[in-house]
Length: 312
Length: 312
Image 1 (spheres, one colour):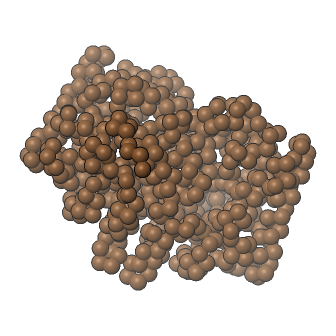
Image 2 (cartoon, rainbow over the protein chains, first blue to last red):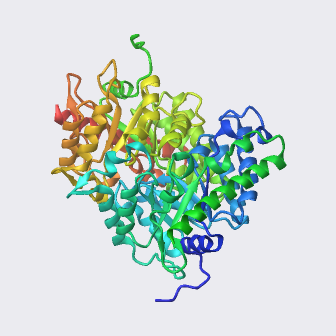
Image 3 (cartoon, helix red, strand yellow):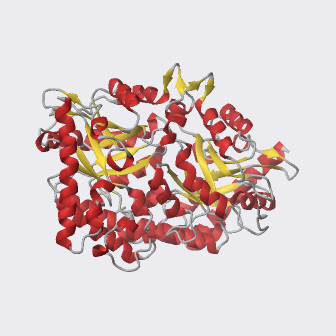
């Protein structure tokens, strides 16, 4: 078997290296709520089905990415917000992803896709190939349909170093409805974790050991998060729920482990807290808005960095 | 509480009325596999990232819809196939949906979306509102994240008569991985069915009694399908797996029940069998292709109609 080239792209390696370099695991969620975008960026009516709205969203997010470059370990566009704008929204998403790549920002698409056979193949080809119309580095997936439905995504993970984040235990109030049903005395999501473990053949990064077969584990159910880490020791965790959704920084890093480089092993996402700080909405001009975004990025990075330091 | 207007749109009522009128429950899946589209419709390179390809897909599907109008109870575009083409694909999907509506064909979008809070709200607003950029009549959903994530879709079902088809038991080989895990001695999908039942307040159609809270149940696991029907007596079933996926017409109607108008209660989907009959791929001109499509539609309708007759 040929050795992997040392410089081949590997998402988990890249974000963990960035976590070590930056001193925090902050991921910026790109969730462009129309009613919060500052007037500075408006064009047209700002109604969802006005094509000018997608142009405003694109301008706003590109300005944000210019502030976030070199300061966050990754960015996570939420595709629902772009689908809401129809095809002009998908065009804007494509431009936003390209701009993030120009700034060396890894892009994790939050799409929560899941389907069977040839349909799964089409989703994978839509987002994870070099010539995909929207070509990202990682994607979130839903495995309710079974392990076979992950196959086309795993193929891209193995061949191209792309990462998959499978929904395991989410941060919403109703997440227990299915995820915590008791199967042989253990919650369902831990059985899913075991099944994912059986797939985790050779997706570990050559540089850090963290795997491109990641999972989504909310920061709002701590015992469940700790149990998920025990079940998946090498999986990179995508952790929503920090900030606006109510989780503290100490809660957010509860699954991080120290293997000699400080606590690591996850991406902690903040969306509204970074995109829409109060001072940003009130900014009278571009310079004031930029200062508000810079302050929000610094505050969240410091908060998470301090939580990592307390965990050492 | 005001009575519902008798002429208000109700998806389940509409498709069941059409089933009674047509004598079969055939739904045409719109899965435009690029390598099967007849040369007749080609434009550009027919590669996925050539914008001319989306135009060819649109032309092909609109020609198909013109043949299917008045002959199938609904159409089901598979959104993954359009996402694969980037934003031009989404634009084509929007045109295809509009054309179906001009032909009075109900449109069920196969999107299998599922997400929390404001993200779920954006998916619902993207597809189920009157002013959505791609405005359909029904959508498939994934409920792994819990019942609360269905709320924005249920709201549209109640207010606008739209239908939801929640993934229950799918037709793929790996579907048992999660869906059949044993919870208190019963497979998980039946527990999910019970939870859905608790939501099924007033989504039943005033004309037929069939509910707009539907489920997806494959035609390949018959015992599971029968158990799902027992758990959800009024749910409209979306049944994939007939035809190309291997299920027979008798298997496909196994969950249908006779309440005085002949067996009913489901939509049976065929995609490749209708869109890509062998004779269609070889057609030398438009008239020959139209004849091939007409024959495929007639063959599937007759096959399902006869299965219903055997079940009376």
